Amino acid sequence: MAALSNFHLPLSPDLHDMLKNEAARSGQPATTIAREALRSWLEQRQKQRLHDEIAAWAADHAGTDLDLDKELERAGIEALEKRS
Image (cartoon, rainbow, N blue to C red; front, side):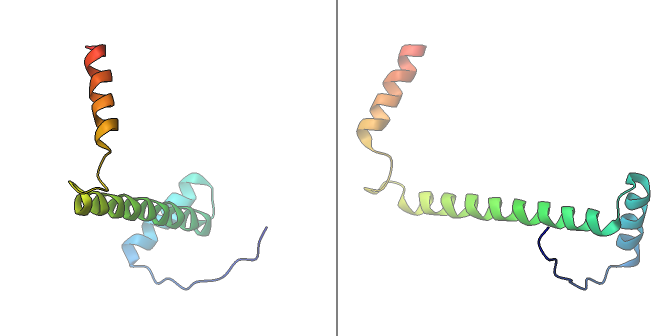
Protein backbone atom coordinates (compact mmCIF):
# COMPACT_ATOMS: atom_id res chain seq x y z
CA MET A 1 0.00 0.00 0.00
CA ALA A 2 1.30 3.45 -0.87
CA ALA A 3 2.08 5.90 1.88
CA LEU A 4 -0.93 7.95 2.94
CA SER A 5 -1.05 11.68 3.56
CA ASN A 6 -3.02 13.10 6.44
CA PHE A 7 -5.52 15.89 5.94
CA HIS A 8 -7.29 17.65 8.81
CA LEU A 9 -10.95 18.14 7.95
CA PRO A 10 -13.16 19.77 10.57
CA LEU A 11 -16.74 18.48 10.34
CA SER A 12 -19.96 19.98 11.57
CA PRO A 13 -21.47 18.04 14.48
CA ASP A 14 -24.29 16.66 12.31
CA LEU A 15 -21.92 15.47 9.57
CA HIS A 16 -19.62 13.96 12.19
CA ASP A 17 -22.58 12.11 13.72
CA MET A 18 -23.68 10.83 10.32
CA LEU A 19 -20.18 9.55 9.63
CA LYS A 20 -19.87 7.88 13.04
CA ASN A 21 -23.30 6.26 12.64
CA GLU A 22 -22.45 4.91 9.18
CA ALA A 23 -19.14 3.58 10.48
CA ALA A 24 -20.94 1.77 13.31
CA ARG A 25 -23.63 0.34 10.99
CA SER A 26 -21.19 -0.78 8.31
CA GLY A 27 -18.44 -1.99 10.62
CA GLN A 28 -15.90 0.06 8.67
CA PRO A 29 -13.62 2.75 10.05
CA ALA A 30 -14.95 6.28 9.60
CA THR A 31 -11.73 7.21 7.80
CA THR A 32 -12.34 4.50 5.20
CA ILE A 33 -15.90 5.69 4.60
CA ALA A 34 -14.81 9.33 4.38
CA ARG A 35 -11.93 8.46 2.01
CA GLU A 36 -14.23 6.46 -0.30
CA ALA A 37 -16.92 9.15 -0.25
CA LEU A 38 -14.40 11.87 -1.07
CA ARG A 39 -12.86 9.83 -3.88
CA SER A 40 -16.29 9.10 -5.37
CA TRP A 41 -17.32 12.76 -5.18
CA LEU A 42 -14.06 13.99 -6.74
CA GLU A 43 -14.27 11.42 -9.56
CA GLN A 44 -17.86 12.48 -10.28
CA ARG A 45 -16.80 16.14 -10.32
CA GLN A 46 -13.99 15.30 -12.75
CA LYS A 47 -16.43 13.48 -15.07
CA GLN A 48 -18.91 16.37 -14.89
CA ARG A 49 -16.18 18.92 -15.61
CA LEU A 50 -15.05 16.95 -18.68
CA HIS A 51 -18.66 16.65 -19.87
CA ASP A 52 -19.17 20.40 -19.41
CA GLU A 53 -15.96 21.21 -21.29
CA ILE A 54 -16.93 18.95 -24.21
CA ALA A 55 -20.44 20.43 -24.30
CA ALA A 56 -19.05 23.98 -24.25
CA TRP A 57 -16.61 23.17 -27.06
CA ALA A 58 -19.39 21.60 -29.12
CA ALA A 59 -21.65 24.63 -28.57
CA ASP A 60 -18.83 27.04 -29.47
CA HIS A 61 -18.03 25.16 -32.68
CA ALA A 62 -21.56 24.24 -33.79
CA GLY A 63 -22.06 25.13 -37.44
CA THR A 64 -18.35 25.61 -38.11
CA ASP A 65 -15.94 23.46 -40.09
CA LEU A 66 -15.21 21.66 -36.83
CA ASP A 67 -18.84 20.56 -36.54
CA LEU A 68 -20.00 17.11 -37.63
CA ASP A 69 -18.72 16.07 -41.04
CA LYS A 70 -21.58 16.56 -43.54
CA GLU A 71 -20.89 13.26 -45.35
CA LEU A 72 -20.82 11.37 -42.08
CA GLU A 73 -24.04 13.09 -40.97
CA ARG A 74 -25.73 12.20 -44.28
CA ALA A 75 -24.60 8.58 -43.99
CA GLY A 76 -25.96 8.42 -40.45
CA ILE A 77 -29.32 9.79 -41.54
CA GLU A 78 -29.48 7.30 -44.41
CA ALA A 79 -28.67 4.44 -42.07
CA LEU A 80 -31.43 5.53 -39.69
CA GLU A 81 -33.93 5.85 -42.53
CA LYS A 82 -33.14 2.31 -43.70
CA ARG A 83 -33.90 0.98 -40.20
CA SER A 84 -37.36 2.61 -40.18
